Length: 232
Image 1 (spheres, rainbow, N blue to C red):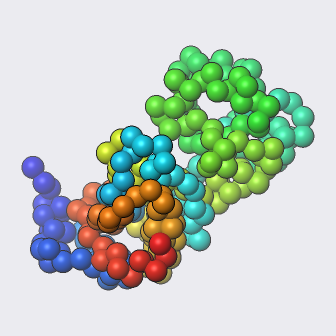
Image 2 (cartoon, rainbow, N blue to C red):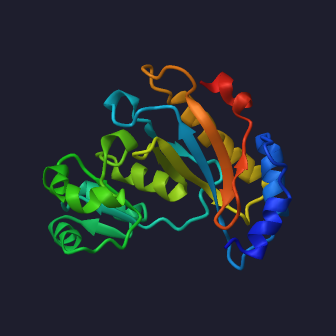
């Protein structure tokens, strides 16, 4: 059963209406608040076939105002410059064989994993462990790199990843409810524009079928995506 807070929020929405991003963010602020700082999420339903490799939509985008989350970073690197640079940049966990062993044993006390290309010869063996959790380093998302310091700083600053799931949906966190309306709108805008620009060339017909913005505990507000068509 929906909570009273959820029903109250739902009553503030016009049935069947799509909102401009600015109007949607203003409406989110009017919803009854939970007892914690809710995360704001953008959800897309895309007209892609995720079973086709050339229709996979995936990438990263830096949020202008960060994600509001303390991102715990693990870096797989042998001792040396890459490891030292990662530590200096603020990575919580830096190492190689001992971290691979811990991950194989089920440990996953981190949010993002980064690896040097050299380390990937062994790290790729963790695919069955880290892959299902979305924690596997990947060159396409900038998490396999020699420049570990830059990668750590970007992730810490609020670089988020977007990726289609098996149903062709994409969910991306764009900040916290405690952010100002302007910060939420700017973060959300760069994410929506990035997903529009990532349209695969092989996709025919409508690409973004629907797009909604919501907080952790609220109903979704349907966005009028026409203002983003020029970004495609």
